[in-house]
Length: 194
Image 1 (tube, one colour):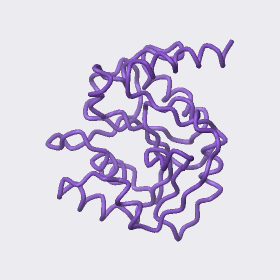
Image 2 (image 1 turned 45 degrees about the vertical axis):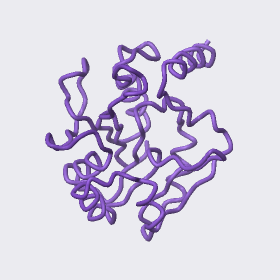
Image 3 (image 1 turned 30 degrees about the vertical axis):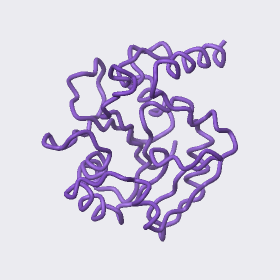
């Protein structure tokens, strides 16, 4: 088991999907959120879900709630998670990336050192800010960004001591923003598990 907490970010607006993607059925579970929580709980010593409201979920898990006055923004989740967990670092993963696997997490952890602010996955298509390790050293910046309503993680990472870990398999980082991507992910999961 990886000795680092993993935070599943499930508080987004899902505007492109047209419905809350964190609640879409997936992998034999009632929701993508529960699928992610169950599988990641087998890999990490502690898993929690960052969200605006825990009421929408039909399963029990540790939930970390965004400040109520904040609109949908990952920066709010980072601030709440660091303030709740009191840890020096945490793995983060967006709820809508169900194929990021144990090998990816291991590579990110192997690349992590105390002197960096973040370790982030990268593929030919670009960086994946919602798949990586963030250090407490960024908390002050997250608080400033939240206060200024600046939620650009890419900008934060470009001005911080960030190490990028390159991966060749783009399909591991497939995320589900639209209905056709969700349908493709369901089909892929069926194929992979038959």
